[in-house]
Image (cartoon, rainbow, N blue to C red; front, side, top):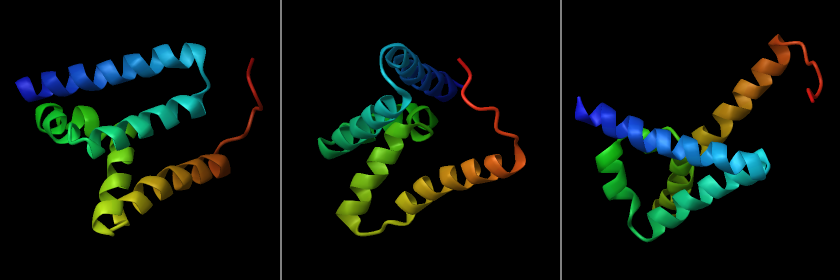
Length: 106
C-alpha cells in the first residue's frame, strides 16, 4: 500500500511542478525541461534510487523519456525511445482523424 502512496506523492509533485511551470512558460518548454531533468538524473545516477522508491510515479512521466534516451545511448538499444516517440505521434494522428478540429480556443 505504501508503494502506491509514494508513487502518488512523487508523481503528484512532478505534476504540480509542471502545472506551476505552465503558468509562466509554454507547453513545449516545460516538456523539454522534464525530458532534460530525466537525462540529467540518469547521467549522474540519481534516477535509479528515485525509481526504486516511487516506481510508477516517475515511470509514467516525461522524465522517464529522458532516462530512456540516455539508456539507449549507453546500450545502443533504441527500442524504448522509438516507442516513447512513436506512440504519442500515433495517438495525435488518430485523434486528428476521429475528432473535428475547432481551432485555437482563447
